[in-house]
Length: 283
Ligand SMILES: Cc1cc2nc3c(=O)[nH]c(=O)nc-3n(C[C@H](O)[C@H](O)[C@H](O)COP(=O)(O)OP(=O)(O)OC[C@H]3O[C@@H](n4cnc5c(N)ncnc54)[C@H](O)[C@@H]3O)c2cc1C
Image 1 (tube, rainbow, N blue to C red):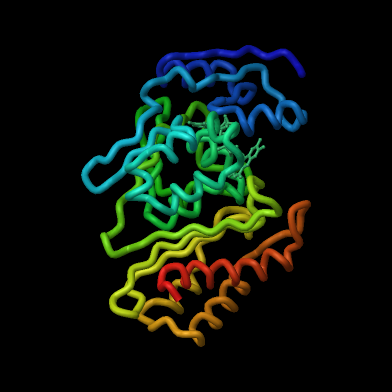
Image 2: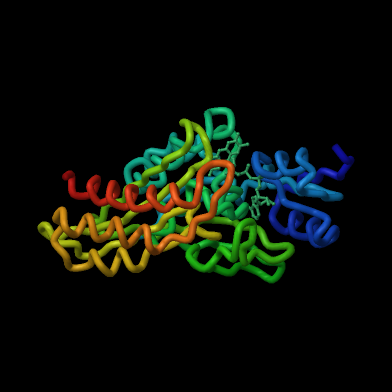
């Protein structure tokens, strides 16, 4: 592997200054489970890695009024161990439990998972169905933006040079709103062939509010607005389930790759959406 500088700043300001000094020849590194793989594969070439590991401001998981704030450096192990995440954000908790394997979960961070912008990132669908915002530290101060607007394409986000993802701010849904997560991989511990989450609020047997996001079916995690529209105000029955399964297949824009064909991903999208609704309604 090519030699590069490795800096370990102890606050965000220093990290930003270090990154700006090297410009596009520097990259932030958190857990390194994406960055180091890409360096070894020579898919990434840098003169400097700026580690975020020693920055206390990027750590911690806490409830704050109607939000839960998750420090970008929180590892998936920490998410699994958090009672707050388990009770308040069960969709994210489940996604954390099925991400990779224990060795990866010990170091991989939620901030890295989001910033890396893989269409298959497991943490994104369960966060996106809950109106999540990202708190970003820029060279000029803080800005907040919706997770839904953050992704521009595979590996591409709205983060600019010298910007650090500081916190993930999840707006808690109403108590009756439940979130669910489903992932299908080739084998357990693998990156998703398709993953998906749903936040759904039922009033009696009718759908009051619903949000549905699938991953690995488009260049960025995809909100299925057609499915949501079809479900709103409706009573769940076998006819509706068949309809939304078909709508999901029509809405996705998958590609074929080493993990699956586009055709299989399309089929799986319908099955996952159907399964998410069945989980919500217990049918
Ligand atoms: C064997 C293996 C299995 C895996 N399985 C899965 C899986 O099942 N599901 C899944 O979703 N992923 C999986 N991954 C991918 C990876 O582990 C995750 O995406 C992980 O969450 C990345 O986090 P990290 O802290 O290691 O990121 P890093 O590798 O440190 O960084 C990733 C990218 O984000 C940037 N970055 C990191 N933190 C910040 C920040 N705070 N602000 C701004 N930019 C930042 C870095 O510059 C880099 O571009 C797997 C990886 C491996 C090697």
